[in-house]
Amino acid sequence: MLTESITVHATYKDIRLPSEHLRALLFDNEAEEGVVHGCELALHELLVNLVDHAYEGDESMFITVNLACNKNTIMIETQDTGKPAEIDLTKVAMPDPAELAEEGYGLPLIQLLMDDVKYNDDSGRNIWKMVKYF
Image 1 (cartoon, helix red, strand yellow):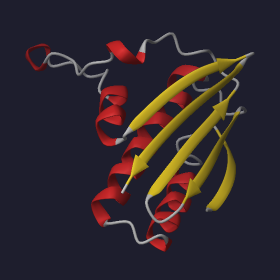
Image 2 (image 1 turned 90 degrees about the horizontal axis):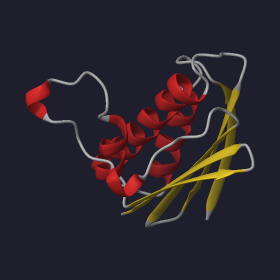
Image 3 (image 1 turned 90 degrees about the vertical axis):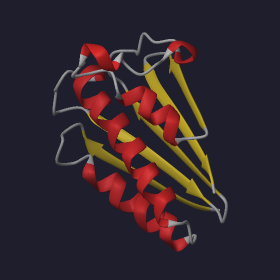
């Protein structure tokens, strides 16, 4: 299993780097283009949520992204020390289209794209784990 760990500042610019590593790792493991794009989008949505909500735009903070991949599975884990997520992943749903919501699509989209999504607040450290089988 190939693994990588990338730590970046919690900025919109820097969170692009883990996505580039994810893309290369998936292509090295012969994942189909659709899987690659879906995983990239899920990671991007999660990282944007961390910048916006966990760190509330504090660019001095860090996010670590751990990637582990083999020929049929990618595991993506993020770690941060921002505000804990107060969310029940079993109750996440897309916003009502009739309400034309501008927010609230990120986590439902992540759950749609990935096969498993988990969150844990471990003594001040937020850990998100996402898995995709291909």
